[in-house]
Length: 398
Image 1 (cartoon, rainbow, N blue to C red):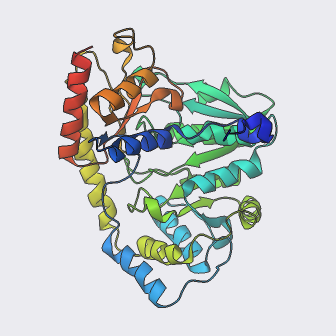
Image 2: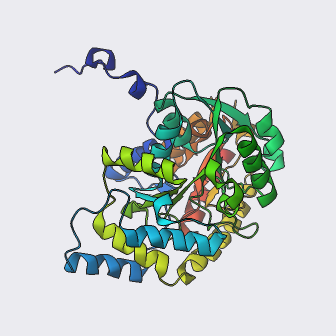
Image 3: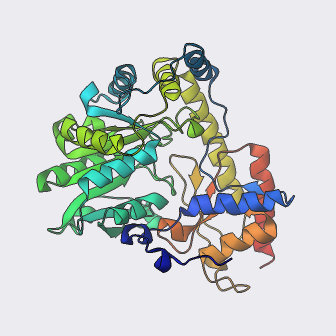
């Protein structure tokens, strides 16, 4: 039996413009090795190792028992949208109303929908490097062109308004910000973020602010562009409960946007997934309106894990790593090892780490750089130690 090629299948241009998620590819390869009985240390997936807090799970169980299992409004229930707005307004001094909120099947869908309704064919989107793996492909799927903003690792991957201004052209439609950053853990200062948003507002450019990790800020107080109320008609906030409440598999994200944009996103969502799962919406309300001490407890533990993994990485001769200020990733520079033992790229390094040392990491090419690998330290200290020791032996043998 033969398999038809994509050309023979006549797949669309838009699907051929994108690649599979680099992160999901690594997870699949690691799972394949595990299915063969190989013990793999997983530093690949960006997923909290904590369990979902009990009161959130109980709310979902209650929703099932109470038969809350029917369709809901496409944008989510009024209760959920009000809870999202209230939580954000309380925590970040923003000013959102129900009609400016749309709940989605995960933060990625919220981002995907926002880009589809704002970015048209040949529109330019300024994207700081390193970037989350999905940003570039989602823009490409919409027909837009990414204009890459190269940052300086020695400056903590800082993004400033001056750097953005140099890349603005008549075709610039949007700027994507991600703070804290996946993969680098970099955090934009409130001052830099304010200046970028102000510049975008002056030029009539959209800011898409992915704030999936906004509660995992270790460097300073939490800051959201939502606090910049005077500019809110020119930015869209994308958020998620996945990292904040350890709810990755529940798939609940949201967009906060001007009502016209929120309405357009709802229209698109009505023709794709419709509403997020009804049961998950009840769990999300419990997360947002319930006790928040679990959020701070997880943040404090991530700081300890961050410090531990940084100590381990810096003990590997030749490896350097900028201190992550948020999220739960380290992004070590492995350029000192390129050229050794046939290693030519970060993909080579990550591939051999997985096959020979049985440690799953994500190569930097998926994030726009060629001399880094991404390590998720959202795991136990014992698992970190196992993986770091394997990495130490692997690099020492090169």
